[in-house]
Image (cartoon, rainbow, N blue to C red):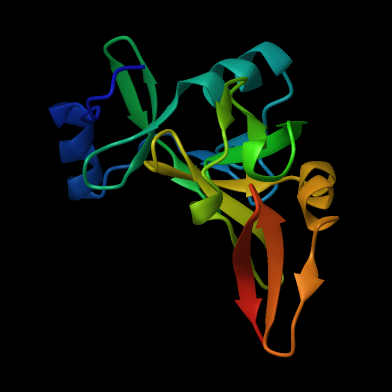
Length: 166
């Protein structure tokens, strides 16, 4: 995917603005895909959609593949962290996250945050998009959870990352 933001085609924008119905494609808060309220069951289509998620300059999530750009509705986040891989230790540590898109990238620990009651989140793709940690990968990081009288925090790369203040 290009670093440039995709644009929704003009004819789809006009349909959206006119209130005319376009096919609704939706991702729920657990990462399940739906078309007009019916779940997608074909794993190849789901994988394709996960690989094709992008965001426009004005913040609209889309499926973007070559010249094809189509708006989607996102209940929580468009991407999910499905795995965590840790290399090294202390200040030499690197943490890599695997995304629902199949990509792997180094975690920007400064973007980690916790939302009650949903869970652990970070920003990915150079900060362009939020991602929610699935349960298992979040537990891998939350094993490091510590607390003081006023905060809950993780220690990553030897640094204290505050997740929540009490």
